[in-house]
Length: 177
Ligand code: HEM
Ligand code: HEM
Image (cartoon, rainbow, N blue to C red; front, side, top):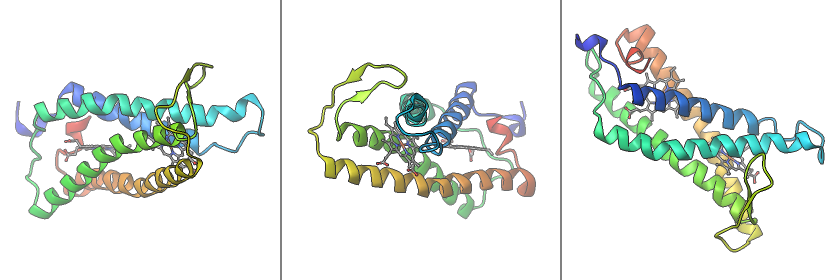
């Protein structure tokens, strides 16, 4: 196999696109918050869907990181300039940190206010935290701010992928397909 046809492992590609779908759905659901009239059963769906896909992200991130540590990505052909490699490493590091920290912050936001209702069920998971309304509000704000910042970081990542494919014409994107 020539280096230009090398790809990420099958698992790495599955992890990447499943996590992408879960993050996109977590964002999509939360953006529908407030659309349905309060008190109706439908009004609970956006937050429950948001929490469900957010937890899916959390469940996938550790196995994904473990897989990444054990498998070096295939080379980019032609090789990257120094600044390109630094920028992409920084972006990937930030994305992994986000995938871990953002769902944990979401969970902490809920637990600071009391038990967590398992999405789309009536099952309740007791909170390991003491109830603290001010902390709940603070964590919620941090979670929201990080969520906003990462629209841009994810945008940069996607722009990078498209730039590699259409302008630099290297194998970066094809390795992930
Ligand atoms: C990658 C995963 C996640 C992303 C990208 C994400 C993103 C966001 C964003 C952007 C908001 C702000 C929405 C707005 O009001 O404009 C938000 C709110 C919220 N999220 Fe997440 N979230 C994630 C995971 C989670 C998880 C796992 C939970 C809990 C199980 C959670 C619980 C919440 C809660 C309770 C709010 C409302 C916060 C408040 O307004 O006080 N999130 N999330
Ligand atoms: C929620 C959205 C996304 C997240 C969180 C995300 C996350 C990541 C992470 C952490 C890596 C690093 C993999 C490694 O360790 O080698 C990566 C690589 C990659 N992603 Fe994404 N990604 C997202 C969306 C996308 C989209 C929409 C595209 C395509 C348009 C894309 C294309 C790529 C490509 C081509 C690579 C390989 C880059 C390289 O090895 O230099 N990603 N992604």
